[in-house]
Image (cartoon, rainbow, N blue to C red; front, side, top):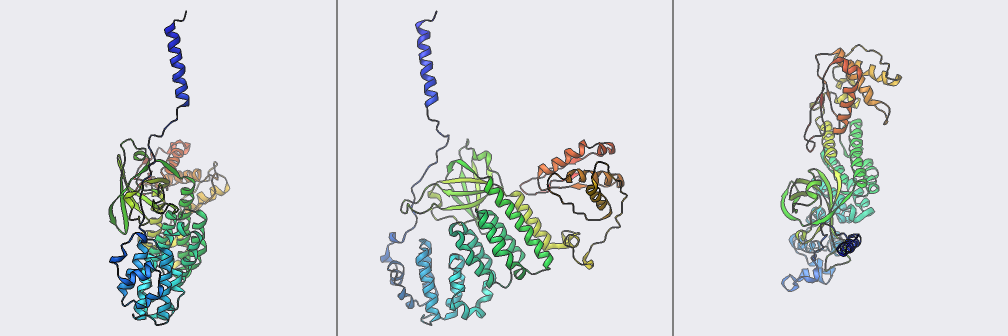
Amino acid sequence: MISNRDVASMNVLDQWLHYIDTEEVLPLFENEELDYKVPRLEALDWENLPDLLRCVCRDNNLSSLRHVTDIEEMESILDLLKEHNEKTRLRDVFCHLLSLEAGAMLHIGGQLVASALLHYLPDATYLTPAFFQSQTWKSHKPAIEDDLVPLAPVIAKGLILAANELGGFIRQPFSTLLRELKNLSLQNFAELVELIALTVRSPEAALDLLLEVLDPETPRLLVGRPTATRQFTSSLFGIALDHIDEASNNKKAEQESIRVELEDRKDGYTIVKSILRVDSAMSGTLKVGDHVSMTITNSPQNDPLTKPFSMDALVANAETGAVTFRCLHTPPAYLDMCAWNVTQCGSFVTSKTSFDAVMTFYTEREACCKIYASLLGLPDTEQIDPYNVDLPVMRDSTLNASQNHALAAAMKHPLTLIWGPPGTGKTHTVIAILTQLLKSLPKSRFLVTAPTHNAVDNMLRRYVTDKEAKRLGCAAVRVSTQVSFRVAIPLLL
């Protein structure tokens, strides 16, 4: 028999179930949007500025530029427009100055103007085509082209950082700049490729910059043996494209927005810090070396049609309650007035280590790698001593013909490269090579490394379960390293 109290309880239960089923589930963290304003010319107190700045920047009277009397006055006009993101007006002023200089209509020496405008390009890289296609550059190139050597990498980096904003329009200025260069150091070239990998978010745009713009110029720009430079560039391009593909396929937007503030400027990069709630998911998901993109949650209050600013960064430090980012783009002046959405693009640790390894290999050469010449197939005069390697080879019944050929080559040559697509038995072949090396050189130790922990663990699992390896009784020692600093995870046998 059901009492009235039971009926009342069941009614309450029904109401509770209905409430649970229909109640909106709210996120643990809110994506806040903060009102902020970007600097605008209209907000300036023009009465306190010089007449020439008012005529040019406020009234857009370009003819007044002929009254510029010194470089500082010219740069103050350009800086004012740049600080207020007036790209169109800045381009017009810049081009008009070039025109006035070409016509000898300025009160300043032509070479001084040319040099000043060249040095201004890192601050406004989209002006690169206008400068290098001008009569000013053609006339004064012999006198100032040496200034371009240290400036060019900076300008090139600025163009790459603007690729997401300018899209396909970045190709012409980038190509124009490269054509004007006499040479480019391996270090600067590697830094450009690395920056493309981190900041160009479209795989198609990255491919275009790497293969259609950079690659054709490398034989002329990079000094060194053609074989070495070709392998150097192809190695860097491969690492870059791998990370770009990984980043485009593994993007994961965080469910919360954050506030950031300026902490430091180091090695040319801006360091920003965010204080997180203790229960923030980012405290557990963000790790040192992670590549992230950061975008302001909303458009500025005084320019609602403007696309919110976005920048790429690397996680420099991550701990409970705080995370520090090394910004690849220059953050805006209103950095701490906004809320930011964070999107994870995957770890850059392995790619960075690979970039550094390639750079070290091709710059330090024999000092860092005794088999440098062998790897590149350089002339016999640069080959290393073969160490008289000629170990006995026993055909392995578990291997096919090509795998046994690889085994024989490994036992007779100081350097053997084994290539094959996935599933062709490379790991099994390497295990067979290891066991025969251990038989022939029982007192030796062998180091096995790979780009990832998983690759080493896979090798270790295959080794410890191999029947022939078990009969040898040689134990493997798994040596772990800090993955945030190194990529090679060794396995000692």
